Length: 172
Image (cartoon, rainbow, N blue to C red; front, side, top):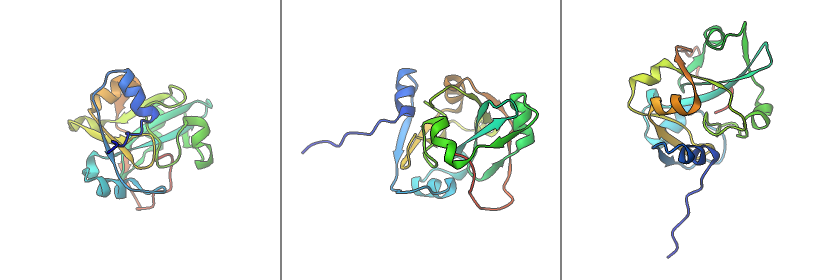
């Protein structure tokens, strides 16, 4: 009986090249779903499940933010973290052309280009966090310090409590 081959994504290949330990969790999903639902499907605690959002600053530069799935990006704190006057979310239609990933499968690892990345400081309170594996249906468990190191990220507070439960933002 043939063994099914694991599908490697750009994010996984990036971590392999960097010789970083990680674990892949696969889940069944055909289309975009919010991060809280993915956490429930994978059994990962919501507070350890992080989403990837991409913004554009007034300078026209792009920035990547990694924050808990049940929180929102504080745009003022995000702008301060990257030295911009302001930042705004990129349009969903632009996600793939900017990152190489689709909505719901956007990983902070292995994007088309190396964008300045910010990880919410809450990640540091865990031994590991879960981020998108680079496609819908894949999640990567990784040590937050390893994520910060390989992405060249800074770790500062950029998340705020959600005002609503509607997940209509960013990347995935």
